Image 1 (cartoon, rainbow, N blue to C red):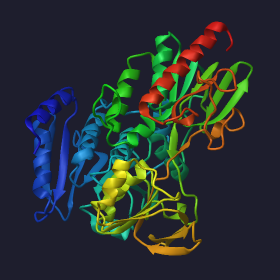
Image 2: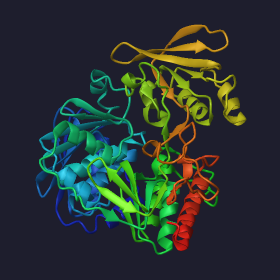
Image 3: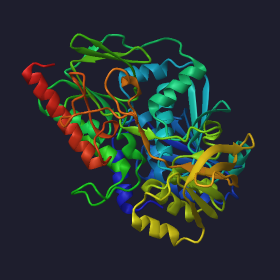
Image 4: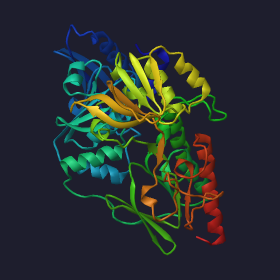
Amino acid sequence: MLDTSLKDQLKNIFAGLEAQYTLDAIVSPQHENRQELTEMLADVAECSDKISYQMREGKNLEFSLLKDGEPTGIRFRGVPNGHEFTSLLLAILNSDGKGKNFPDASICNRVKALKGPINLTTYVSLTCTNCPDVVQALNAMTTLNPRIHHEMVDGAIYQDEVEALKIQGVPAVFADGKLLHVGRGEFGELLNKLEAQYGIEENNLDKEEKSYDVLVLGGGPAGSAAAIYSARKGLNVAIIAERIGGQVKETVGIENLISVPETTGSQLADNLRTHIQRYPIDLLEHRRIEKVELIDNKKILSTANGEKFSAPAVIVATGASWRKLNVPGESEYIGRGVAFCPHCDGPFYKGKHVAVVGGGNSGIEAAIDLAGICSKVTVLEFLDNLKADQVLQEKLRSLPNVEVFVSSQTLEVIGNGDKVTGILVKNRVTEETRTIELDGIFVQIGLMPNSGIFHGLIDTNRPGEIVIDAHCRTNVPGIYAAGDVSTVPYKQIIIAMGEGAKAALSAFEDRMRGTI
């Protein structure tokens, strides 16, 4: 099942394992995926004398990870192929203390303090690019806290459970039978939700204020460039971010990063991390700043859990997030018919009718992709014309199962209490309203800058972008902004990188002049 080159890589990866690991499978003799799972486990076990597998007869298809014969709390119900294969590898490495996706000590202590028992189940699609992040984060938590148990479930194999739970978006995380989370999620976000539901036994957070020369908020292309350029100037730098890569990780294919003919968002995020780690930069992931204070020349930033960081220079590179429709029914049905990622959730709508709201490049690309899966795709654009590139429009109009309506305003998402059943739209020319019966709605109306905590502190424009000059300076000395969160035109990866570098150089120049 695994090719020779991949096996060779695995042998190197597993070379340092110290404990003995068993892939303990329980599989029905009649299960259609039995052979596939057996071959995978055998191939993985073949790559290390520290790994073995055993097969027992049961009713379904699953396997657990044992360490020295004892349960680790990690289980897979399905065959972790595709993106989830990495989740299996990391589960083994993390259990051995050799994984590289553990957070810093402060975050680890919060995980260890969670009250239990906590039984987590994550339903995934093997085509979903967001699912592995959630699975790997929860597996890491399971390794840190023995009171946590986590299982990954392939929704395609366990369709009866997916239907019974009315799951229409992945990853879908259930905590002791209660829906905890749907969609893309970061370690910190998931941890916050677990703390809210289960509580903590003690607070091990370090309350001491940590001081730096430069604080960079955001770990996307702009934030990464800002941190690297600042570190290269010999400054004491920290990145505070929810994740390295930022919005880039949502991008499947990247073909316009000059000198890099083709890459993926995930690969670019990994490359950013690798580059950051070449410098003495404190990488503080899984955090969101909730308060900013200005005291004399110092900027003090605080998280919800009481961590404080200070510096004379702050570079805001927090990027942007998917913009929502903000109409009745939207929030209620997120994960139950309302979706934002066609690559992740598209397979749940095979043979069904969906709408794509938004006629820009992202919306039309989504519609084209969904047309290959769904029976019918309806595109709804607010303006009088589509905004997407002409080549995309031509491709869209060549598809027989796509219809396009312009001058269409979404008024309401309609559902039956369990899932979406339709969308109420108004023709902006005739003022006529109608309900379109459908099974799902993919919202693709652009991005909203993540600048909320700075409103009232520094100047922002009407859309919420932070106003900057040609040097990335804001109206407050010592605060700079770069990338999609700022007023810089053209939201592109390569531009964000350049703006991050520019912000760092401006901050260094101001420091040398003594203005901050």
